[in-house]
Amino acid sequence: MDTDSGIVRRLPPPPDLTVIPPPIKERNVFNVLVNKSDRLFVDGRVGDIKTLKMDTKEFLSNPTNREDLPEKRIEEIKFIGSYQISKGIISLKNDRGTSYDMYIQVQNELTAAVNELRDELSKQKFGVKFSELTNEDYIQAVQKAVPMSISEAEPENIGGK
Image (tube, rainbow, N blue to C red; front, top):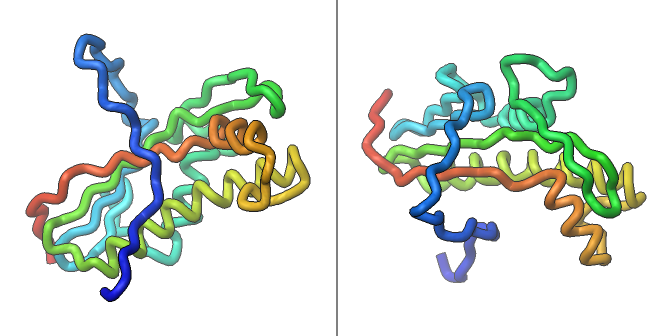
C-alpha cells in the first residue's frame, strides 16, 4: 500500500475498572467470526458476505421485536423524540490468518449496515441522508439513536478450513 488509510471509528473511552459491567444477554450479541480460510460464520452458522449487511441491519433494528433478536430501550432523544434504541452489539472476531481483503470486506459490510440504518432515520426525521447532515445536533441525535456498537476481539488462531 502506498497510502496511509484506516477504518474511521471512534473508540470507546477506557473502561472504569471500579464498575462491574452488567451481563449482556445472548440475544443482544451478533457474533461474526472469520476463520483463517476466510470463511464467515454468523451466530455459529456459515455466513455469506453478500448478506452480511442485510443480516446485520435485521439484527440491529429488530423491526418485529422478535425474542431472539436484541432488546430495545426507549429513550427521549432531542430532535428525534421518543426512540427505541437497540441494545444489540456486534461482536467481531478474526483469525490471525484471515486475509486483509476479507477483514476489510467484513468491516465495510458491518459499517454499511449501521450507516444505512442512520440514513433511514435521518431521511425520516430530517429529510436527508445521514451523510448529508450538516447540523451537528442532528448528527449527534442520529448517532445516539443508532450507535456504532461493534466490539472487535484481538485476533487469535481460530482454525477452520
